[in-house]
Image (cartoon, rainbow, N blue to C red; front, side, top):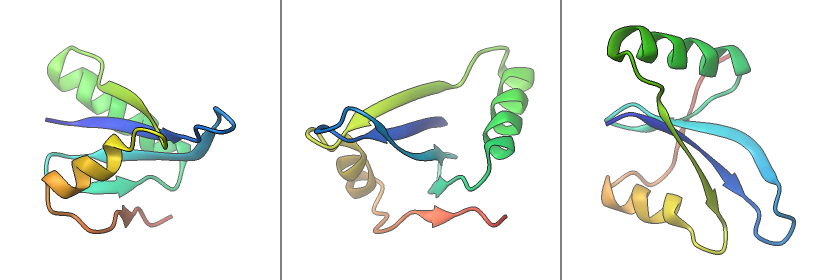
Length: 80
């Protein structure tokens, strides 16, 4: 299971800016737009499908519940 997500602020309805990638083991906060592009391209080349992306809102914090489910307390940050 691999996917990406953004967190949307419920008050402003805007993205907080960071895109997160779950690689099947851990959540990584991507630090550069090129990281997202290459991850999506490789996924599509290998599977023939687009990688699923979610916009999760702060008023229904599924990202928190997901981190709890995979037992990850904080996200890792991709180095630049």
